[in-house]
Length: 433
Length: 167
Image (cartoon, rainbow over all chains, first blue to last red; front, side, top):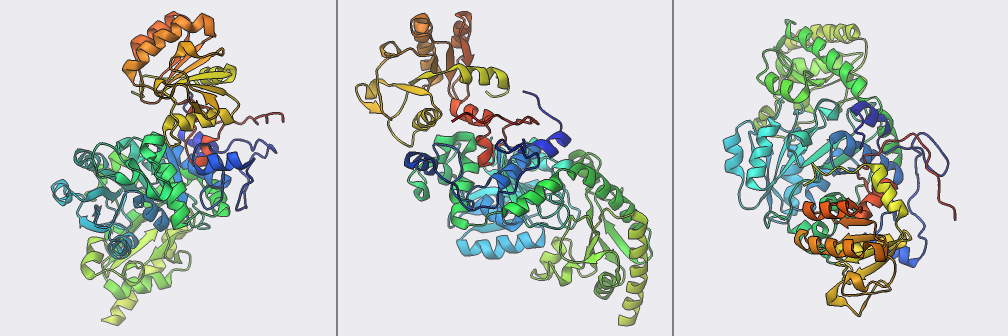
């Protein structure tokens, strides 16, 4: 079978000409439900005995095109899209987590993930153990009999922390548990975690994958290679599923079990479905992913070097910096690119951080990353304000920290805006003293 | 098991395109068994599927009479789908080779997880096409893009407009 290159699949995977009309671009199937041929056809669809569409909460042709494309780009068997990255994370854990089950996660995750895992998941009786995933012994020690998964970000938002994916995959494999990687910041253009041993990959497609700040979305990509029957931890997939008239997904559908379960049970009962319009806009974004990532990363490297040399800046946490402890891992896993989201610290502390984001006139002060536009944020006062001081510092979001998502504008314009805003931030810090 | 078994899409499409009748060895009457899923699906796609299973012989699965052995299948059969383990697949393959001329058998297909290289070599030497460790439902669905509807990677990239089947 011809295996096409990444850029070819970025444009074509999942999107052949629509056979009824010949439409070349993937149509937006803006409809809720699908006609059955007859009662027998309907029964076969509901029994998962045939492939087809029932109701757009479960599957939709436009969303399916995006799912196939993401599965192809990440090197997975299948993918399931969801309404947002947070919805995708909930969906990812849903098939195998029961009340009292645990998972181990990096303590340097995106703050929103830390809150979701430690506060909201706890309401379902799902418990998380946060550890420094750079310490493999700590990871091993945290895995107990009720642990179902290990979760890390390939490139953490926003601290510039890079996970040693291959080493973590080995720890998870030795323990017989799933290794789940959030690949939002790196995107499959820089890193494909399944190639390093990840079992599941999750994304907020809202970020670089859609790329234009238009569409909320998330995805779970299943490698299709995890052996659910190797131990008794995964009864939700290997045993009879009470929410699907006793079907054993792993036995009946094998390597397709996880993706089928996500659609047939997860989306059916959690309802966090991606809208077809958002899937369409995300497909459009994906067509240029590798080109955008190249420029995002180039611009980011220029901005990081500028900031590192600026007198108002105390430090820059950019994985591409020669001084970053994560550069060797980034070189290994991201092929010499370092993403475009990073943090830096201002000598003027909290007051300077607030003043900087308020003084920008080209960079946008908002809570998102991975837009064509350059974005800037003071995490301690916004995205990470729900966390404790210790959690903020562990997540690389202390009081002096500013997060930047470098966009695709002319890079000298980005530098000029930062330069004038840094001057104002310095003045504000002096006034606050 | 996957790495060293590569079948081209045209090879699989040719087999599935020429096949009319499938003898399914190990067909189950239980609705949630994988073999039942495959039989039901292939029937809806216009294939006749004849179940072979000594345990259920004399009964009926999805409207077709169940027989105990391949030799007892009454109609011509061009495709033998083996839903048994790798060891059993050897004897079934030999039986299929012996019956090939009489029944019109051209394809030996071993299901996902089933691989018997020695049996495959014997079948190939007898002029039969062999596919191992694959599911005809998944391959038919994949080649016709139905698998893609569920979010799965078909591995197919094409700028060609597929022709719709006439009504």
